[in-house]
Each structure stands twice: as structure tokens, then as C-alpha cells.
Length: 409
Image 1 (cartoon, rainbow, N blue to C red):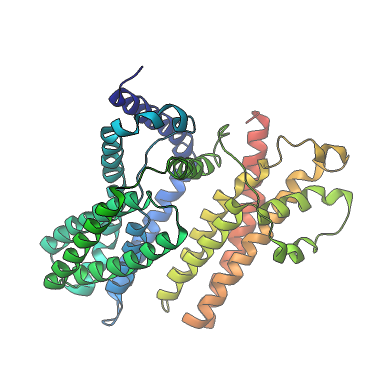
Image 2: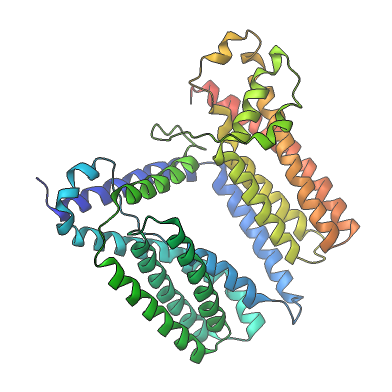
């Protein structure tokens, strides 16, 4: 039988190799070029916006909420499998070294997000607070300390199954994170020290409680599987992922949307695609999240004539790319083949659904500019958004799907 160290070593190597294998497909596409193009455009807009940044702009508050979200979602990647509940459960008392390695890997890999986020915010932070490089470096270090604390608490909450305990912890940690990050970015280090003392006491409190509790294997395995599936969903946008699981949720309140489709044979795939889009948490969740994030960002870009349109187009592109895998949702289903006209209309039905969904997103972003900018900005955002959606759906998506079908992908 393998030792605990060998089990971890085998799993982390397999995890890294699998991630690299999928990243080759994900980064070896037009997406990388588009991100470089949008990144350059975004950097230019970012620098121009900083030049006219109002003195009362709430930069610290925005950064506080952003980093609170990033740090609050911390969790340990255990790389556990379903069979572990049978084979590793008897060895639970010997798994301390395994979980310590899992914690270290999670801390190192997730710290990258914190550091990159702070680098992206650095020009805004330095401009809005008149901080210097030393303060910026200290902020990164202390943010990583807060990250470490969140990861520890997240791990300890894995010993609890009660939803009330988890919600209470989420509320308390949200408050602590907001205070710690706000005081840190405001350079109020005395208050940072006080909050850090509270964090230490909170950690100590849970350390004593969990000393009498056992590891909740089902919960850890389910959480790990959820993280794997999240990555597989993204990878599935670029290539087939055999391990991807599909889930559906009944959303009766959205049935009125489905009823808009005429009951005819040629609309079989149109009905199936819209039903899958609404019932699957993957597609609808991505659409709603990116629409909200884009709207929030546009809200803070006041009177930017072309900035709003660029942000809108960027998020429309992200949404379209991520829900493009909807086309293959019914690939293994034979039921649509019972309808003779269904297959001929599959691609056109998919493009119609995508056009409608992204058009809704354009309208939302445009309406946001009505309240935050002016009618000219609204018109530019709306017209450029509609033009981009039409080209993106009926040219880019259409050609890309046809090309993949030719080569049998």
C-alpha cells in the first residue's frame, strides 16, 4: 500500500498534468489573442480614466469589497475522491501530513489571485490614496496573512454540517474581512492590529471546538468534486471533457420564456436549447453573474464615452464564449433525431438563442448607462453592442462551430 506522502504526490501530479493538458486547449485558441487585445485596450482606458479620477472616488471601498469576496471564497483543495471514504477513512488519524500538504498547496496557488488583483488595483490605489511602493508591498503581505486566516477558518468549518453554523461563520468572517481590509488599505495599522487580534481569537475558538469533532468526508469529497466540475465546465468550452457532469434545476418561474417559442417541428432544438439554458445552473448562472458584474463596473465608469461600450463588449464576449458549450449539450441525446427537421435547424436554432440572450445583456448594460452617463453614451453602448453581438454570433460562432464539426471535434 502507498504511503500518505505517495498518495498526495501521485494526486497532485495528476491534478497538475490534467490542468496543463486542458490549458493547452484553452490558451491555444483565439481567446488568448482576444484577451491580449482587450487587455491592451482596457489598460489604455484604465490609464485615461485615472487621469480624470474624481477626488472623492471610493477606491478603498471598492477594493475592500473586491478583496473581501476573493478572500471569503477561500477553501482547501484536498484532491479527495469518492473511494476515499472507504479506503482512507480507517487511516484518518494518519492523514495530518496529507491535509497539511493540501493546505500548503491551496495557500500557494490561491495567493496568486490575491497578488495579481492587487497589482491590477495598484495604479488606482496609489492614485486615490497617495500611497507609495512600500505601503503597497506591505498591503500585499498583510492581505496574504488575511488569506491564510480565511483558509484556516474555511478548513475548520468543514468539521461542521449544520447550515446555521456555516451561515453564522460567513456573516462574522464577512464583517472581519471588511474591517481588516478597509483599515489596511486606509493605512490605519493600529486598527488592523486590533482586528488581527480578533482573528486570532476566532481561530483559537474554533480550534478548541473541532478538537472533539471528526472529519466530514462526504462534505469534503462533495466540495472537491464541485471545484473539479467548475474547472471542467470552463475546459468544456474548448474541448470535450468526459468527466463533466451535467445537472438541471427546475425553474418554473421562467416557463413564460419557453412559451415564447412556437410549437413546431423545426423549433425542436430552439426549445431544447432555451430549456437547457434556463434549467442548467452553468449557463444561466454564468449569464446572470457576468451581467451583474459588468453592470456594476459600468456604474462606476461615469461619463466615459467609449469606456462603457468597451466594458459591455468585453463582458458580452466573456458570456458568449462561456455559454457556447450549450451547442453540445444534447450531443449524446437521440431524442431530437426522431424529428426529421430538427438536425437541419440545430445550428440556426442555437445561433438564434445566443443572439437573443446576448441582446438582453446589451439592453441591460445600455440601460445602466442611462442612469450613470448620458443619452449619447447610451446610444453608443446600445448600437456597438448590437453590432458586436451580430458579428460575434452569426460570423464568429457560426464559423467556429462549422469548423469544429468538419474536423469531428
